Image 1 (cartoon, rainbow, N blue to C red):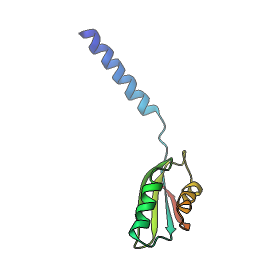
Image 2: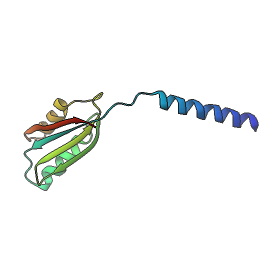
Image 3: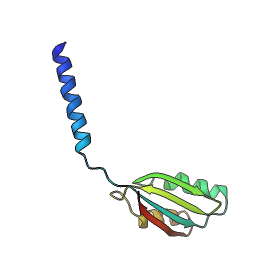
Image 4: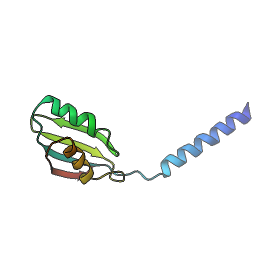
Length: 100
């Protein structure tokens, strides 16, 4: 029983050291002005762009026709995200792009 406890403790220490030593990627946030006209437009953008590689969070607002995306810059960029919105049939212009 002591041997299992020692092995488990060593494993836990290794896991903690590995996760602490791994560099964390700084996330970025981009805000697009997108020509959305209705709630279905918002739903279409949220349902499709949310699953793009690197997207961590997405909010679409019909009131100011904006799409705000938090993304991992190691996996995607603003050009690819804008293209994903454009593929859905909406014009998309970057309003703001900043590091978090």
